[in-house]
Length: 258
Image (tube, rainbow, N blue to C red; front, top):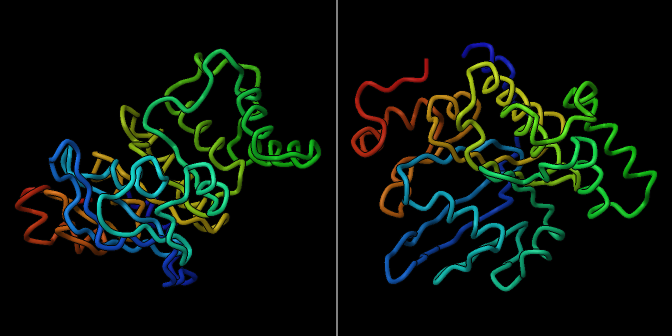
């Protein structure tokens, strides 16, 4: 995946924290999912989250967006404690964007109508809506697909559309849940380049959660590995795959990203 790595630009990245999960614990039916977790997400970084099923990756997304409240601890976005902020206020105030693993579009609407629908929710002025839609059409090369119903798009085209829809409100923080699932190699490479371009051109902080560890590690600046509700490894892709705890509990001894 050398083609992907050459797109990575690191010199401009700030160290400023945009999201902080502080001393977070979460329980589901008395079962502890997150155990006193601390995590900082920096401005304009691409952070990857890895770990087996049930370790809390999706729960972290739900905590950030407000779909789930912590039992203990604080969710801090842009320096503001937002534990008590409802979902709609959180998305609007902090410019959050979410790309779910499944769904996120209206299958019986055309690609263009899906973009129009979301833009009408987020942008009041008609002229500004048209400018934004035209920018996304050009950015994602949607011109040949505008009249095709979403249900007839390929898996990669649907994923591109959902990402484009999530950008209508110009998010500062974009959460991608399993973006590489069930996609072919070329489509995964295309999505990796999109993620990297969002970081460099749109200056967005991107958080990616996926079971495709190699594909994730080839497009992130930093990764964390979760196990039993805790972060057991954190660092660059090479650092986390070399970490003894991460090897023992997730990667195994033979894993590499080349």
